[in-house]
View (tube, rainbow, N blue to C red):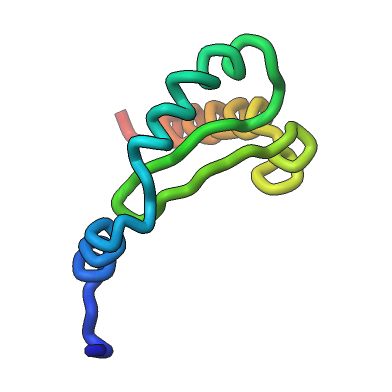
Length: 90
């Protein structure tokens, strides 16, 4: 195997090898997503993107431990954004 595989080459091989069953992911979201969205706490779902395929089933305490308090992070981001905008010349 070449040492010069690009991300695209690796991703293509990953998909072609059928390592992930996208149909099963869809079925999972279709069956459990609506119930989990309204009646459970925690972080449930599947994140698909160019650089990852990640399935998460984390209770709230683990989410907070891993990424911090998202409500506080959003407030902090708003304050920093306001400060940055206020410092720009008009």
